[in-house]
Amino acid sequence: MLIGVVFVLVASGLPDAPPVEEAQVLASPDIEHDYEELGKGFESGSTGSWLRLEGWITHGIIASGHCSQDDDGNWYDSTNAVDDGSITIQPIESQYAPFTVYWTEETLGAELNAKSRNCPRSDWTVSVGDQVQLFVLDDGENLWLFSAGEGSLEPSEVTDREDMQRWALLFCMIGAAILMAATPTSLAQDMRESQKQHSVREQMHLSKSTGVLVKAVGPERGGDDYNDWILDEPSHELWNIENPYAADEGDKIIEEHPNKVGTPVPATLTFYSIAATIFIVSTVWLSADLLARHGSFIHILIGNILRWGVMAFNIVWAIICYRRWKVAHNIIDTPTQLARSVAVGPAELVGQVRPGPDGSMTVEVNSQSRRASGVVAFKWVEEQYVCRGSGKNRKCSWETRASDAGSQPFILHDGSAGILVDPSTWKNIDYGSQLYQWTGGNWRWTLHSLGIGDPIYCLGRAESKRDGEFEENLDRTKQSGLLVMRGNADVGMSVKLSRGTELSLLAGMRSTTEQLIVPIALLIFGLIPFIW
Image 1: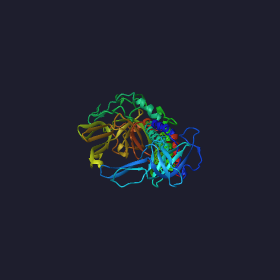
Image 2 (image 1 turned 60 degrees about the vertical axis):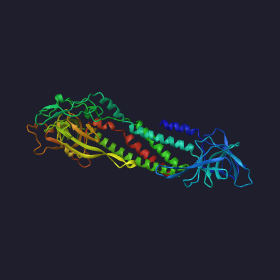
Image 3 (image 1 turned 135 degrees about the vertical axis):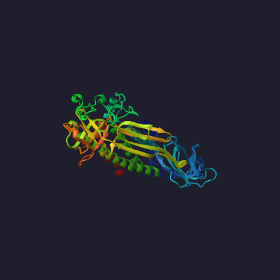
Image 4 (image 1 turned 30 degrees about the vertical axis):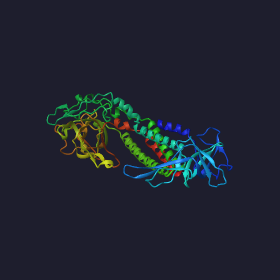
């Protein structure tokens, strides 16, 4: 965005030339014409007259050209304006005296609309004996040439000032888009700071055959896991392995349960909304400017691409924001129950993943050298980096070669009690960030998992256990021990099984103002290029 400011400063010093068609058309500058105060980019109070003149060059040179050949053997002609001192022009009507023009130094470069020539051929010039069309400024003392056209071609439009302003808008647009994408929510910043206070958590594993809780084999999660615990989690040393449905010692609810921390409230407005507004306004302004002011075919093409592009972006952005708002408020509006008091029917639970009746799994990612234990649900993918084609047509990408997924029932424990969860009944499990990624040569293996000790958010349906699902020696006095959570949705209800708690899920939540009002307002604003 600072680059955009630089372009604005440069543009402020450039002359604001009118469209060529608005200039006075005269056979000779000696014919009486009106002077008026010049616009932006000129000294305050200065006057002049914009003229369209035509004639033959009797002295000097306006342009030179040459042919060039690209790597594929194609020939191109190029004619460029030349500032080589004064140029004398004889008007078409011979009764008028010759006049002298000078290329202006107020613009970024001389503008020329030249004829196309067949190549290959020798170099050429637009000089003595050639007919030209001129767009000049008469300041009362000299005639300053701003653009020219060879033969009968119209002089080029002078858009240096507009182009600098357009570059400024473009860089503002790009900078705002980057800031918009990079600006975290107000809740995410605070929660991330809290997560940094935690040391790397030790992953545990419980084998069904031994019934002993041991340190898991395999990789541990890094410290940049946004779906991990934000507050202190219950230590595995406090787990009741013999009776996983029983309450923790002291009936202590986990620190991160919504009943203890409440519902977080995001800031009404953040820099995200400011950046989004700058991005949309800059894009709309740029597209409207390209379409409204004089310019070339390229200007019109880019203007149309921008106005349709920003409209498409606004529609998609508004839809995404609405869906996120709906999911967030579905989570907020659904009361989080305690496992000890949950009843049959829709339920939202938050807790810790603990070993179920079958303990936890050891997952091998296509090799015994790549494995992780302490897992209750997983998915992995094996990919190869493949390149096809050659030269400019060469394309490389990661292609899937093998994949697998699996799960087994586990206990969700919130401190008040434990309840069995069957993850296989959810169509999609949100694992959050990957557990680990192995690499070797042009291969990579990526593992996502839910492991015992992880935080878990469960929105589903509590159902009575079926015959064969009751464990031996089950304490049937505990209501939660008779139930199982499944991903079976009631009508009008969404289901979700996600690694993390309600607090971490809502970390990315923005206010209703930012999720609904701002996108809708900017969507309406994006209609301006279609009606301007």
